[in-house]
Length: 220
Image (cartoon, rainbow, N blue to C red; front, side):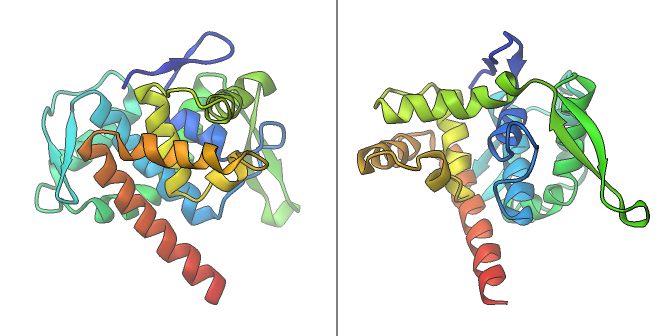
């Protein structure tokens, strides 16, 4: 599951691509509930380590397969935490834990690479930082590529299968495929169902966590 090239030719990591997918390419506004974005980014970070063979998922638990530190500082941080807490292995536990910081950490990594810029919004005493794409074409590439392939019934790469799985598990797929024929949605689900078992287990836990938080939001 290798990183793919962006519209600007720069290799992109899975969490970066999901960040773009989950936010408007011009305003940076989230397309999802905050909890869905946070858990989706947490799952994407775990999937990055899985793609490198550093971790795997067995019976809804995370297993460290290779503790050697990745070159990327954020992947290194996530793996170090997993290694330091061997008693805690449930995937949902780690999704909840990393979900508390994933947005800021992924946004910071992308900001350091020049993919996002920081902007202060709100009144002076209630200001907050939002992250805006520095290049609309780069930000839209993830969305355009995935949408085009699914609408044209193309076979997805392993990287894009993981990205599509993150979209489906966070309930982003109805927006991604808005106006597409039902067969495009069937193709998305079918290709995700054919992914490797460890990845499917991660996505199943992500879907359960997001489904629970969305239901809670709607009924509260």
